[in-house]
Image (tube, rainbow, N blue to C red):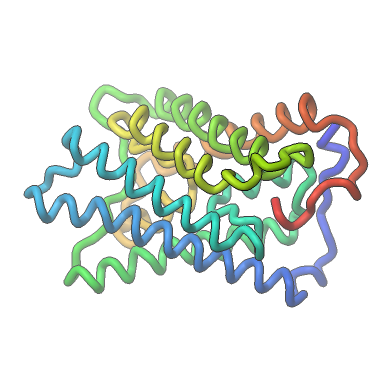
Length: 252
């Protein structure tokens, strides 16, 4: 069982050069992703007089986030594994592919990267704020939780299949674009209902800058549950009882 491979790690790990470099890579990747993804929505709003919630705005957001995540994962892959998402980090932890100490470093870096990106957007746009994620009319909090669980399950399952699985072979080459594509597709599916976060850090930055916390817990609970289920399912059924030494510990 992957749960038996869960590792806390040593406190000294937090001060190791490779762990700090990996955290810095996560910070930069998250900044790139959020700045481009959230910035595209702000630009669309400006050009269309608040039309980001139109069908065209949804398609624009899907494409921008897919492209930006493809790049953000690619540039961080050789350093940190290119998680760019606390839910992905949690899914990797559940499967025994990253220690708790390193995972916490990643979380801090990812959350800071998102906040800094939103602050930079606010400054660069002359004071405009990135809108916090919110539920659409008629969508309840638990409806949104289910949406986030299913969408994040698909994302983390894709990460495992293309980047984590030691049997991935040449499929690993397309991991960043596959991860970007599933996020883009999920935004088309869930964006009109709850914004389709799948990423607690992406929700956290706008919430901090706008100081709007309505239903914010949805964007943590859903992604973390979905990621945990995906990690357990893929690791238990498809990776199987391999030894811990055979599994990557830092690159996911």
